[in-house]
Length: 244
Image (cartoon, rainbow, N blue to C red; front, side, top):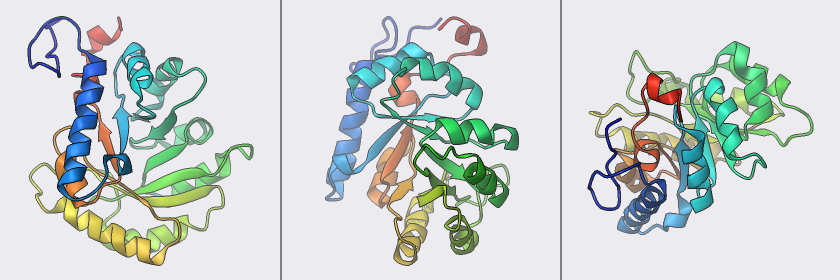
């Protein structure tokens, strides 16, 4: 295994330092917020845990990370071991398969990737009555990419209205994964978010920005950023994943 680069020093030596990486991410978030007159505390860091070892998640949680994002239910089942008392807030951030909605509805606090009414209907029906309503974000295909999930921007209003009818779901806002070369995507999504917030109650979450574009996203108004590589290091290969 190639030694990882330490986020605190830029040198390569030993295992990836999650604690230093978490501090560096928080510093980036705080600086980006200050640049536009905001507080870093207004931006939630969601640790994107895709394929990472549970011990890395556990370290980040010990350092203060309070939100974990999962792309796959299979990964989540292992990652829950890092938070046995469920102190963290867990977000599902990947594409949702119909046969996984019951598990997602029962085990997650947030779903950030809602883009089909069929899935909304299933999540609503399968959310346990003992739990608070599932907090949801509508995923928007802001750059119009054929390979990306998400509804089209012009569909936001009607889709939001339909989702708001489900009593076990609480619509909170929008999420997107802009194309890397789409320089205006963050600002456009922020405009759609502002319009939705003016017409729907309880809209307060705009999730956009990852390791490479968190500053641009925060400058545009993001309230959540989903950080993977900068927080946990490069994702392991399948062979490495067998021995976390």
